[in-house]
Length: 58
Image 1 (cartoon, rainbow, N blue to C red):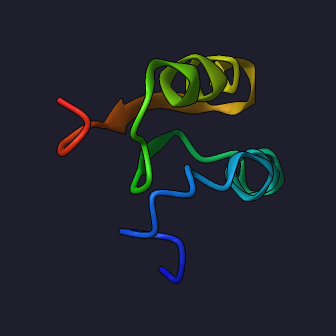
Image 2 (image 1 turned 180 degrees about the vertical axis):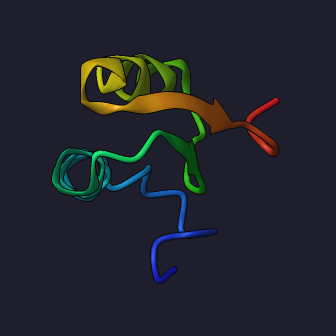
């Protein structure tokens, strides 16, 4: 929550750890503001991250 709106990008490592440790299918949301962020989130697919919410970046 502290990163949302800060334009500092998503916390990729925290998203990966959460997905990996829970085994849940996730949709990442918050902080995505560039194509680079989208690519990084897509790289988490093997860990269970199935998508992302992109709003303001559009």
